[in-house]
Structure formats: structure tokens, C-alpha cells
Length: 262
Image (cartoon, one colour):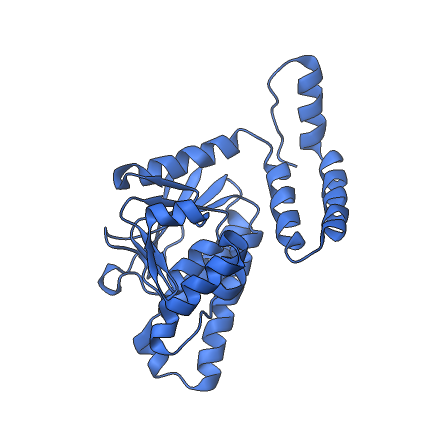
């Protein structure tokens, strides 16, 4: 398995677990971490088809990803600062378009860039000690890794504005209540629950998941009529796959399907 300086990879069942492994900095998104995330995606997109899902978490008990690396940012000129933000934009967009489900297993702080990394994942599962926030206004900044785009889609425009304008940190239970987190579980169960969700996805058609995921991302910002047009396109695309032929045949024949994955 590929090695990285700031990330560690492990497997559990059908899932690949990516851990941001910089606990001394609370797993902050230093430039080196962002570079490794980009390299990881290069590797996963070309060789990761044996895995049926990706779980992203943070090393240690305190932090998922605490945010951007402010010390590094403070010394960046405008060109470097812009490139840093655009590189994280590219990472989050690629996570959204991966062919498999991506789960953020938030084990602690998910602040600023950490919250934005989680928002780029399909599901957010949180431990009871997790906390979330977009505290950039405390530094005279605004979210720059996708928070102003994705947070309103998760929690609604009014709640997103409140969180961004106040910089308020919220605990896991509030994140669940407002729709930011999908589940809240005891810390010791977090990875097992995330792996179990990947195993559920592994039992169905991987092709259908991939088509649905990419179609839903493409529908963001469309009105209902436009979105329904995209849905028809995706429905037809899925219908003509080998997985669909197998799934429909298995249903008629009253047996369990064996999806070929294409």
C-alpha cells in the first residue's frame, strides 16, 4: 500500500481508512498534508477499485482536523495563499466525485478547514466528543476551503450564516440536530460504525452508487426541472449497465444478485 509522510492508510473489511496523522498540530491542513491528500487521490483514483468505500479520520483523541495551518498561512504571499485555497478546493471536489462513498469519521475537533474537509464527504459520523465550527471570522478571515458553499447545503442558509458569522463552535449533538452530522456514536465505536456503513454499501451495486453520487453532485444549484433532467439521464445510464441487468434478473428469478461492478 502506498506510503505518505502525513497520512496513514489501513483497511477494515471493504473500507480503506485514511488517517490524517499529524497529532502534534491537531492534524491541521498544512501544505504538506494537502499535497499528500492530492497524491492519495491520484493513487486511489487509479488503483483503489478494490475498496468499496473510504473513511477519513484524524490521529489521536483530540482532533479530526483542527483547520488550516495558520502559522504557514501567515507567511504566505497572495499567490501562494490563493494556490493553497485552490488546491484544497480541488481536493474536496475530487472527494465529492470519487466512485465510492466517503465517510468523515469525526473523532474530535473539525474546525475551519477540518469542517470543510468533512463537508466534502458523503456522510459525517461523529463521536460524542466531536465539535464543529467555522471560526475564521475570529482571525478576520472567511471560510476558504468550501465552507460557504457546502455548509448551507447541509444545514440551510440561515443556520450556515449564523455559524459562519459568529464563528461559534457546536458539539456533536447539535451538529446532528441541524443536519450537519448523520450519526453521533461513542468514540470507541466510531470507526466500526463507519465500516459497517461501507459494508452496507458493498452489498449493493457499485456502479449504481457511482452513477448516483456523480449525478447528485451535478444537480447542486439546479432548479427542479433541470435536476429531473439530470436524474433521467442517470436513470438511463444505470439501466444499461451490467449491474442493472444482473439486479433486475435476480429480482425476477428470486435470488440474490452478484453484481459484476460495471
